[in-house]
Image 1 (cartoon, one colour):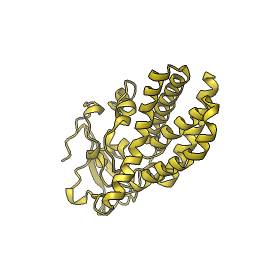
Image 2 (cartoon, rainbow, N blue to C red):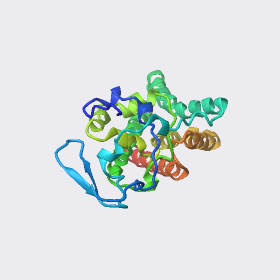
Image 3 (cartoon, rainbow, N blue to C red):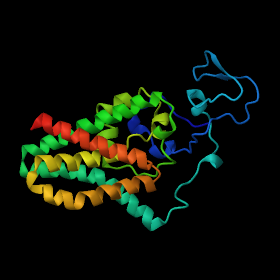
Image 4 (tube, rainbow, N blue to C red):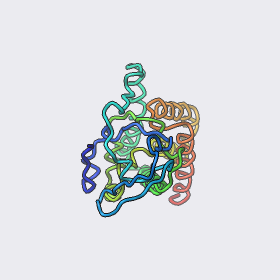
Length: 251
């Protein structure tokens, strides 16, 4: 059985352990009569009738998954393309980190407002993503096993002082399956939106090159099976709206 301590911190949680294949099809196969499934606390059982969708039962979702049922997404990927897509995807965190360096070098307060804005917007929509976990809708889930490497983005957002406490209180296995919205797209779009608004002199440059970059990041998230097109688009829209709101707040 998969060994997972519900009280452990998110910082000790390995992302690749959660990349388990998930099907949006109702888990009704083999249920031909009333079945009692004991909850994880062992105090009571839930009766599930024949043909009933049991995806929303936590004890069922966290049941043992055989290794043969875990799909290795890397096998079907071209190694060179896979490395390129991982690099593009991880470049989002590098982009954010570079703003810290720019702030230190230039000491321009606008960069501080941009960093703060991006942090607030990304954290807010990550909380929204957690709230949406109460709903069992197919478009909220990742399309497959998300291929990813731990990077700066994990430490800045997924393990920050706000989110780490929240992660300790939720079903982290279930959270890892959720893909709406794409936080990568929220982050990258919010960054370029705030730069565009706070620095008018960069607007021509932003309009020339940023759309290509956003498309590449979005494609990388789809290629890595982390998000589908809808989740990417929603992330872009939310990033733009969040960045615009924060600019109007701080200007």
